[in-house]
Image (cartoon, rainbow, N blue to C red; front, side, top):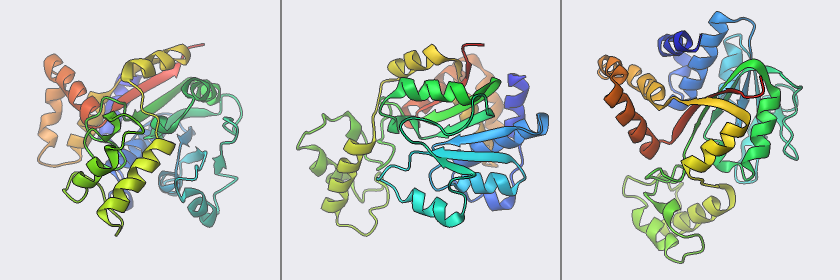
Length: 275
């Protein structure tokens, strides 16, 4: 089923309201629609849903879609979810490492840019395995330590520099405003750099891919899917779409995985191991 489902994801048609979302969000919605078309009803969880953009969009499409997040202090997401009226029902707060849903609740779990914020990886993976149905699937996108560009502020190699090094703030300041860093939010270059380094130290836990795969392997059977994620991104662009079939060529597929892992991070498709 997974191979045909992968094909369905690439063909999934999103409503115009979703086309302005980040491509990662669109990828998650495409997975949701593809599964729903095959298996309805399907219960779907956005693990680390943030302010709930994907949750709201998915539910507007009639999907049985939920969210869960720890709502750490580094973001304002909890306030936004509360204002939407979803907090406590559709979107639930993770406390003490416990995902507040029953065992085997979900057919599909989606996770976009979340695992680099998880301090204790294995207990969280065990919880995800608990709430995933025996026949369920988990789709994960997240950066590892090997990515060239720090995923949250955009500064190349910033996360490779030793924590506590006095060089990191001036290094980030040098890159700010060059087109490689992300929006400075009207801050001075120095203040933006100091805040970016502080935020990274407090809320990001980069791990090497090999360490992550070992942890995943204790709870899940998984496959790498970076070429599928890249195929989706290419398919979103009219001029690039004809390149998608090239990703079936073995050496191009292998090269595309390496490129994705260095520029974006990993894409994993996981199923429960204890089945």
